Amino acid sequence: MIYDAVEAAEREALLGPAAVLMLPLKARLDLRSAQEKMTSGLFSKLGDGTVLAVDVAELPIDPARAYEVGQRIAASVNRARLSGYLLSVLPREIYKRCCAFLPNHSRHYVILPEFPGSAEGYNGLLDQARTRLGTDCVTLVRGGERRADGAFLVETRDGEQHRLGAPGLGPDGEPIEGPIFLADDVAPQRGDVRHPDAVFVHKAQTVSRLSAKVPAANGICLNYPTGIVDPAHELLLEARDTLRDSSLSPEAPVFDAAMMADAELAYSYLEQAEMNATGLALTVRKQINGKSFNNSEITMWDVGSLILGLLAAVELELAPADRIYRRIKKIMASLPVIQDGDAAYPPTLINVRDASIERRGFDACDFARLTSAVTRAAQHTALADASSQLMGKWQIAGLMQGGVLNNILKTRIQSSYLSHCAHYQTRVLPALGQSETRSPYREAFAGETVADRTVNLLYTVDKIGILPTEPLLLEYVELGPSAECAVLTDVFLGAMKHHFDQTGQLLAPSETPIDTAPWFVYQGFDLGHETRWNVSYRKGREVVFEPVASSPYGIFSTKAAYLWYAVRPCRHTRKMLDMAQEHARIDGFGMSSGLFLDGYAQMKNHADLNTNGIVLQALAHLKRRTR
Image (cartoon, rainbow, N blue to C red; front, side, top):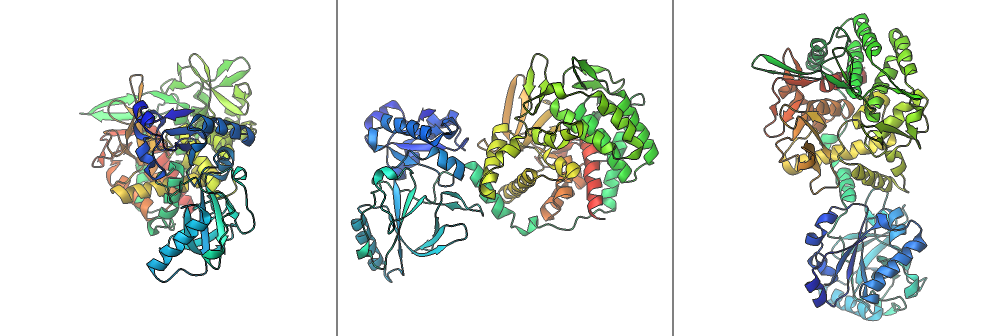
């Protein structure tokens, strides 16, 4: 896909070489706004001309086929005068796939024993090197130390360091420029160099011995560091630096009397909201002027949160275990099952008062949450039989397709693969005999280095959409972290702290019911938009995205604050927990769903089942860690 970003009149007036920007999957510059933002001015250091954007996801995977496509692109834009511009920190896999057809600018590094002592001597030596090599794209350096990752480490006269070698990211996440050619050993012809960022390294005792047998750089030099940074790499590098901050250093978890009081308050919600006939609970409760406004519809996600919250209450000794077990058994016995041919599954929505079906269908993510709860309940001897009987009613093999559990909507079947819940499902569904399940996280988490794997994973997170705290941290609490979960947790935490350092705003993002229209919002980390932290909600049929920092619906989630401290105790997450403890308690009612980010004002007299159940889970996990 090629996007012309220069107006026709301007394009006709320019005869300079064209510039090509390779977009790695989804870059910060949204393609819809390419007409406005990808102007020739953006590439002023490369010369004026038509600016094109090529989405590498559209290129063939086969390198030979990609090369053919590139040749056609080159032929269509000013013929042989095409100049290539490429982000220097693309993952190796994408680099190898998309860049073979742009042999248009190279750079020469001349490694000297020492730099001349004066500026005049240095400039004279640089001019001499440019003359002998036939190009202005020359950098005088010293060093040439070979690193463990195979890259050369060199230093300029100004102290700037460059790493030269196989292009991509090093194990520590820093970009490596390349590919590298040792000019003293090999003299490739122009046709042999099929990469826009080719680096030629000359080791010379004196400039007079430099050989000009390597191809010139077409008169265009790539200036490092690049002015445009791919957001996935930007996030990775920021998170790596931020995680070194002492406020994120792991600390011994603390479970004290105040936290026990929080657990008692959260459990009071589960007790007060209980329906005697079913054992289920009201999902949202709000009081205005002494009047109660309650939501009596419950999803299977919230049923799972209720059961897991009750199991946490047993662990925290908030009520007699036998009484809680009786309630869980009542809940399990009340859950309806839809028979649909060979498949049998719980419905999307039921009424808490009598467990009648409010909405038919099947939600794979909610089902995974319920399954996690029931399998954990089965570990309690008193609940083993009831759990086994309930799981025995479910038959989901017919809902699986290609290793993916499908959703059943009103009018169609929908894959649940491209969701942040799919990885959580792969951790849970083996308990039901479905061990060959697919995860977009797992399939994306591939590459030669941790940095490559992380960036590939972040691309997939971006493709899926806003990443909230759940189910990411629920995997930690319920199942233990997978490698993918651990990496995303690091990046998420580092990004929250970076936001705090930049703005002073303390975030605890998650999807949350709120006490005003639109009533429910999704918020979290959003790699693919102009702003990194966004809130999403429905306005009629329209889906609205707004920056969390400025949206009237930006929420500090109570359950997210407790989860983050339970999973990653440190000074920063303790600050999040302190904020929730200070402002989110509603005495005699439960933990508030959250705080409005604008002033951290509480959603007064507004609490929900999912928040209070997860707060109990987090506190039980925290107490377990202190033993």
